[in-house]
Length: 153
Image (cartoon, rainbow, N blue to C red; front, side):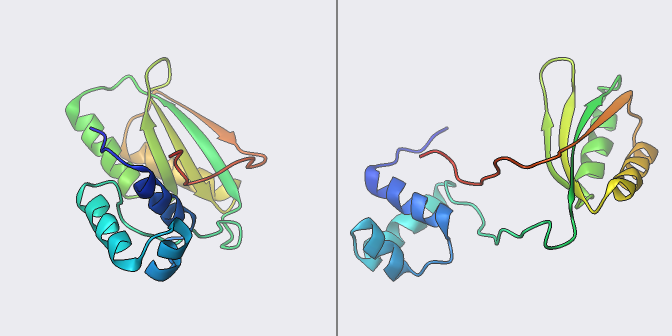
């Protein structure tokens, strides 16, 4: 269910997406309003679930996590118990940045960030020891062309 947003809400959200660490005064100045109305709108957007948690975006390469793999998973298992164990295994692994269940020939795609190929193999070995997987294909990203957290408003 989507929430109705007006132009001011969109401006505020755009500023928060760009830098959530800005002061209310800065945001208010940039969107052409004052601090109290901006705060009230932000509070309402949080209550409506439009704004979730606020985080810092870290540079993975600066932290030595230079390898990004996209992992395509096919499974012959679709029972509830298998799915529960699989989802728990993914949630317990900090290397998994994203996990999506797909329509089509591939059941799941994971975005995995690790130091190198050896670290990926360690991740892979641990995953397949916890849950049975029919087929795994790992694709190494050679270059990140675009990565953003900014949603189109």
